[in-house]
Amino acid sequence: MRNNRVRNESWEDTLVRGLYRFSDLTDEDPPNVAALQMLVARVQWEERRRAVRDLLLFLMSAFAILGALVCTLAASPGLFLASQAVSVIVLLGVAAASRGEWRQAS
Amino acid sequence: MDDEALIACARNGDAASLALLLQRHYLAVKKYLITITFSPDMAEDLTQETMIRAIQRLIQYTGKAKFSTWLISIATNLYMDRLRRARRERKILEPPAPAPPDHGYDPEWADLMQRLRSLPRDIALPIVLKHYYGYSYEEIAGLMSIPVGTVKSRIHNGIRMLRKEVEADA
Image (tube, rainbow over all chains, first blue to last red; front, side, top):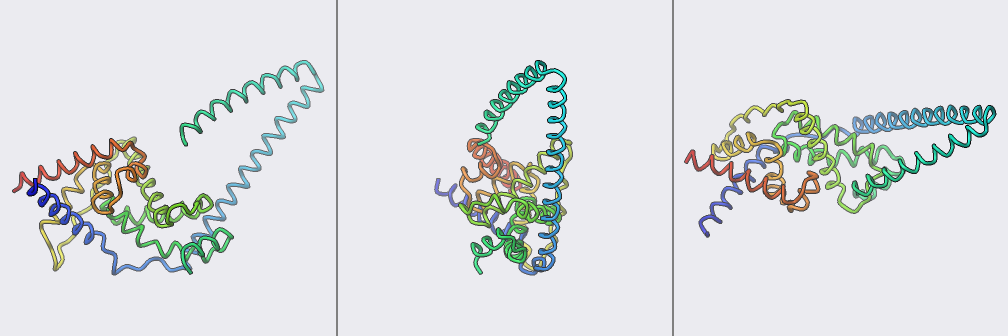
């Protein structure tokens, strides 16, 4: 048992020594701050662009849906109420399913 | 300025503080990635991706763990994603060329390193995290998003595979 422990330690020491030497970066410098600052600016600009694009898509979808609802209400109130009821049921179902996924993920 | 102060400034939109913070941790992340990927080129790519992901998700950093630990978890997730993608595409991630010998060349560790690199990536990774970085089984399970039991069995099997080869050579 003691021999096994000694063999374990020496094997582990060899591994640690090998990985330390393999990953030695003492001769290397990190990128300079200016280059990283440009990277930060670029990434943040792309994130803002993505957020604006998503917002525009959402607004367009919302207006399209509202437009359809207004037309339906104007043309046929009964049909409008029925479609609203169906939408609410579908949304509740999606919310319940998503809640299950959230619980699982957390 | 310490990390907490830089993070606070970065969250307020100070790009220079964020850049300084990333520069401070850049080599540590790269060194970590070299030890788990065994490929300096892949480590360089993943380090860049880690920095980008950190910039995108700085708002999600809660401060519960050290900033360096948070970066390490991002780096590990990115590497795991790459492994999963390679498996799905049935690609083999090229093992790196052996390191050239230097003045302090030690055949024993070079041999062990070669054997470690030849192990499947998802077995070599927990071995390195446990025996080089000293993470607990639970921490490794969290980093790799696998159960603790799987971590233990991979480490056990991996070490057994390594030692079987070492003993066979002896």
